[in-house]
Image (cartoon, rainbow, N blue to C red; front, side, top):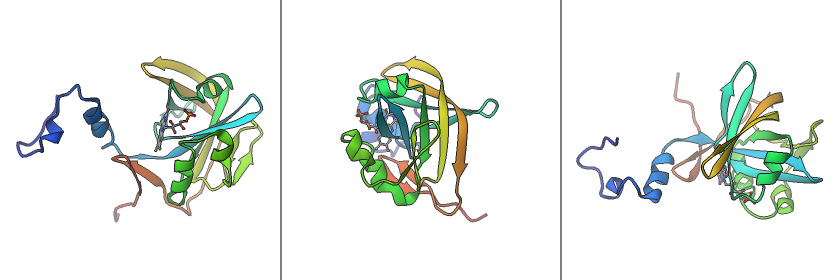
Length: 176
Ligand SMILES: Cc1cc2nc3c(=O)[nH]c(=O)nc-3n(C[C@H](O)[C@H](O)[C@H](O)COP(=O)(O)O)c2cc1C
């Protein structure tokens, strides 16, 4: 059920079935931005993702969801694992780069480090999680990809990149 003040605009009162309105409502949930990568068939794969979330601390499980229509779907579902690089506010261009184009173009000019798992991680990321595939869940037009964290790292000298109402932004802590 929707609770809306009387004065709310007509646009916000569109029928509940309107997919564009549904997407707008979802976009009010602010997230960070990540790039997920994997190695499959001797090629590096990567895509921008904001559905990343922590699931369990013990064992260490994380998840994200991938559109079934994504060209990289087989890479992420069949390679056995993935690496999540959490982007800093200086990496908006990287977020855009990994959302389109072929895989060579996506990695072009982006500093990366190949890990023991053979997957690339973005050197300038704010945090990273290298994961073994734990479970795939069929979920509508997406698959939920769950991973068990094998290795991770983080830094505290940069701010996080944010995504809110379909725009990139930066997260700033309120004064304590
Ligand atoms: C900020 C942002 C977040 C995104 N999050 C996701 C996501 O969580 N899951 C997803 O499947 N696609 C997501 N995308 C879209 C993919 O990055 C994009 O569709 C994909 O890279 C297309 O390439 P492919 O079809 O060749 O895999 C996101 C895009 C942007 C810009």
